[in-house]
Every structure is written in structure tokens, then in C-alpha cells.
Image (cartoon, rainbow, N blue to C red; front, side):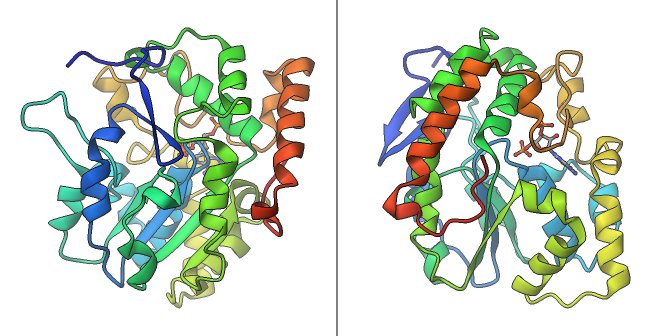
Length: 302
Ligand code: A3P
């Protein structure tokens, strides 16, 4: 099986309305069978919407703000597995679901799948889901730089392609607004918490407090302050456990092209997108925000 880059015809396969891309479509059957536990915590949302940031905050909350969770030991993704991750090209392949099944303590993991592709037990077991959105104009710029910095993506560095992929609903893990709607339809479920990159950025401390409350994890003000201090952009950029420096050493990313902790602000898209590209995206956003199945979804940013 050859490596499939971003432009390969078999890179994405539309599965139950989601453009699941290589290698993740190989793990969908295993993910569907995955048994969630009542104390699981899943961080869900589109790629480049602040996944590592929210996983860092929530990991610290679940570890009583113990700094060693974020400062010591292996890279974060070994502590917070990627549910649908798999390596079908390797003979003895890795599967996120295997790691999670072998985990005996409380499990924290993340997923980029839309809600319809998640294990059904995640919604019924009492497990907690934090669903985060980010302004799609910012997450698409972040994804553009992510692929530029990752040689295996075989991405041709054309920003217009990413704008078209988002706004024409062919982006991996998209369509974007269907992804949001797949979770929003479960808004009555008390075990799903909706948040946004922008909320965490605007009100870091209050959002950490909200997460702790949702997770029934009482923390002192001092513990909350510790979490905030360890999860600022500046602190995380200097922290090798979260900033993916291991992947640079392994040749997976070239941080000279773009570091993982790249810009870390809402609205940064304005430096990269042309006015016609912004207009195209704004039209697509405005159209989708009128959707009946997104009514009341206030954390959508434009
Ligand atoms: P930018 O590329 O816009 O800088 P994900 O973890 O889903 O891949 O998201 C990566 C994005 O989250 C990157 O965005 C990264 O800089 C941003 N990010 C990570 N930690 C952050 C933090 N502590 N504060 C602000 N942004 C953060």
C-alpha cells in the first residue's frame, strides 16, 4: 500500500457524510466497536481547532493540576491517545483503540471524527465529551501550514486549494458545518460541553473553570491558576512534551517551514488570505449559519 498524499485520488473517502482521509478510514470499524467507559473524557473537534491546547488543559484538570502531567514524560499524544489513529502501512501497526483498551485508569483521548462516526457508547455511557469549534478561516490557515511543514502530506503549498476544500465541503473530516451539526444535534445531552478556541483565548481562566465544573473535578483557585500558567501559548511553545519537537527529530515535521505552536491567535487568517478568498469563505459561512440544524449554536465564529 503506497503512501497517500493530500492530492492522491484515494486520500479521502466519504463515509457516512464525513470526508475521512488516509489512514483514518482504516480504523472506522474498530472505532465503531470501541466500548466507552462512564469516566472517559473525549476531546472532539475539527483538526487545527486547538486540540492539543484543550487536551493539555483537560489533562491537567484530571491530574489535579499536577505540573508533571504536562512537563514530564513522553509526548502528550502518548498520554492523550488519538482515537482513530492507525498505521496500516506498518506490519505491526498501531491503533489508538488498542492503546485505549489497554488503559486501566481514567481515559482522556481526542478525535476529529464527526459525531455520527464515533462509537455509539460514547454518547450513552456517561462519558464526557468536550466539543470545540474554531473560526474555520483560522483553522484552515493552520491546516495549510501544518501540511506545508509535513513532507509526507505531499501538499502543493497552494492556499487557494485549502480555501476551496473548506468552502466546497471537500476538506478532510468535513464538511465543516456538518461536523458541527453532528454534535449540535446532541446538545440536550448533559455530557457534551460546547466550547471554542476563541472562548479559551478570550477568557482562559473562566474556560478552565467551566471545564473543571463540567468534569466534576473540584479545583482550588491556585490549581486553576497553575493550569492557566502552564497552558499559555508562550509556555506551551517552550514545552517539548506538547510542541511536537519529537516529530521534528523524527523528520515528520519541518519547523523551519512552520512550527506546531505557530501563531496562536484568533483572526490571524487576515495575514494570509486575499480579499476574494475571505469573501468566498464569508459567503459559505453566512449560508451555513442560517441552517436549521445549527440554530442556537452560538460558539460559531466568523
Ligand atoms: P495556529 O496554527 O493558528 O497557530 P490543533 O492542536 O488542533 O492541531 O491546533 C493547533 C493550533 O492551536 C495552532 O494554531 C496552535 O498554535 C494553536 N494552539 C496550541 N496551543 C495554544 C495555546 N496555548 N494558545 C493559543 N493557541 C494554541
